[in-house]
Image (cartoon, rainbow, N blue to C red; front, side, top):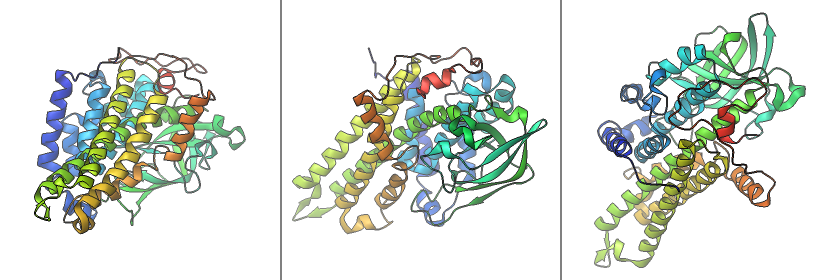
Length: 415
């Protein structure tokens, strides 16, 4: 039986992150958004509080939190601003958890431990100028040369590109093999031939860094390869499943922020001699925001419960991401409508919510992709086998032998 009762630890995490957001983010976010400022001290403070290692076991420098606590962290951070949930998605979900699950013990100690402590910032490099959803068609190449691989190519739309120290990147050792040729590597800032740059002119998430990665004859030691040669696609898909969970949780927080702002304004603004909250169609918009947000939160917690128990959750995580991100966009649109002309101004936060919300229906799988995923499950084209993986809290992360399903792959349900 699924139990949605929050534990004492869950509630402490919720209280902690709300207080952190109120003190460190909300007083400054309008300025950071307007000036496109990435405030690194706030990221460092998140590391000091254990947020950047939230679900990582304590023996690898993390806080050992469960997946419901991770969802709460993401929800409350995005309730303040999306940029601070993004670092949870990329640094924790896409990078640290992937290396934890697929890496060797040496790699966990070298990369995961400093990342969990917030001493190093981590990123994830899959998307390319000509490759998005079609991740099996990578153009970035890796050729073996003695005790190293030589990488050539580029990545785009990479969160934390100019901020991160470690990059989990994907390249193909043989394009003819399709997804079976893709291999995963940790590229470290400072490696000769590796360069990053920032993208400007984004619609939203102005307080976050997004950029490009370029590789020109970058020599990456074999000991920086994550998983076996040719397992990169599986590493990427299992990582993306973790990322989708954090995006879904964050979108619930954004929708909640839309409710908060709209309720406040509906009490303050008067028309025709009464609060606008008294008008039936304003009530309708608010009621729909609340309904969709509660549904999204329960979908996220269901996926988190499955993760905590080591049960397959790809279908549930996809559903949560699909619903929560779409609902966040609609909530932001309705929140602007509740605010009327004021909603079109950055004097009020709802225009920022709309700009930020739009990105999440694109990354970590577009809404169209998740529509197809859910239809394929319903039609039986995708199997929903009751596979198990290492439950939380995990005692160890010993990697499965090459050629067999790893705990991460089973958890993600990738095939």
